[in-house]
Length: 482
Ligand code: NAD
Image 1 (tube, rainbow, N blue to C red):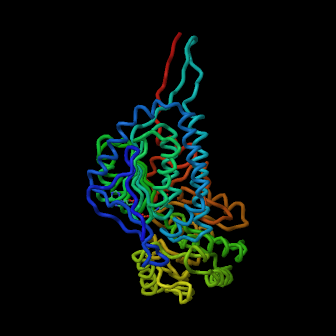
Image 2 (image 1 turned 135 degrees about the horizontal axis):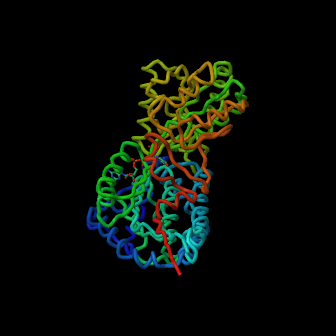
Image 3 (image 1 turned 135 degrees about the vertical axis):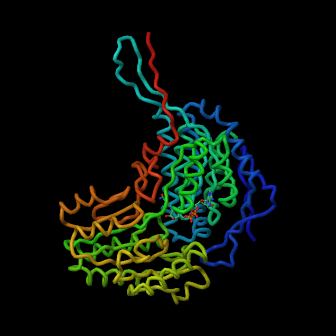
């Protein structure tokens, strides 16, 4: 038996009039229903937006330090429930316990961070050109922000949108992804208990095309922040800009790691394996292309296969690598294995469903490595969103850089090299919003900006860091003569 969670609107937990629910199954044990959520209607979404609009003026007028106090209190409540939230995240989304715990901690840290920012930010004083004048800016909230989030970081991404939105004085409607909404609902519970006034946050679960569309199109919504696939995000961007809203979309990736001839193949394999197979390859910043100098190719591939084959796969509560989130995501990865073989790539590791007894009936897939990949092949161009790496051999740095940039995406890119010049050229010439030297593609700091280039982002506003607050803020410039 599982609970049915209600929508959170105007400070109340309410059922959708549809009477329909969404069932979330445990991807490691699909016969187990973890929880049920409201399958909401357009009317439910409208109610959420109207509640946010009604609460907007009072929340905007609430002093920043008081807004910060509520965020801090919510962070403390989330920290007290960290183990419970981690278990819920593992059960709904499937990632391994250590990964889920890290993600919950990130959400907690984000709320603490923006609690401080809520007090600190407010505008800047400038030197006036005239005597007897105060020249300064005041930061005001944009208004009602609609947040639409994906399943793969189901607590961190809602947190990194919500905390700056609330800190800056906006009211919010949030639609979490239907595959794993539980931890986002728990953020709402913590904020409610921390004393967030009614209507400041409203969370409505349901399908993107129903709830999401209403959020994007409703006149009372001023800003839309979307994270998800490029296909949906580009549609959302057009819809939201057509209705005059401020929009940010952060989307898919096809992230490369270049392994230079000066790299230690074992160190490079550690970084690629961690970037590619961590969180079951279901990270927007996951490494899905290793672009390897031919001089270190054989040694690197042997080391990478060694790591792929030593990963302990099974339910995330007890194993190192959990399942894919759903049957359709698993099938999509297995389809890419077939496509890659048909296009002439060589499967050197994985490519199927693991045979281990730990795996039972869940949506598990083996970490997969392909070699003999050309940059034009589909596994070198399209986001797979599973633990699959395409190894592309190159003969020099210029070719490596050209291959790295030869995709529609530009989210995260890394290089493993001992050559300082190559590293610096890579930093400047990689077409990517996040660039790392001697590091994996995954892993972000919360106090620096994050966002992609090309089809990975609308390139309008960055998330996280101070830049993350800018999206939720509009500046007024004051010339005060005395
Ligand atoms: P998705 O695009 O299918 O869904 C994302 C959200 O949009 C969900 O809440 C969904 O219900 C909603 N949605 C779907 N159709 C909609 C519509 N017509 N109108 C409004 N909303 C709609 O993505 P997903 O499968 O949940 O997540 C995986 C994708 O997200 C991958 O492509 C991954 O790279 C990307 N992602 C990007 C980042 C980043 O910061 N760049 C971070 C995490 C995930």
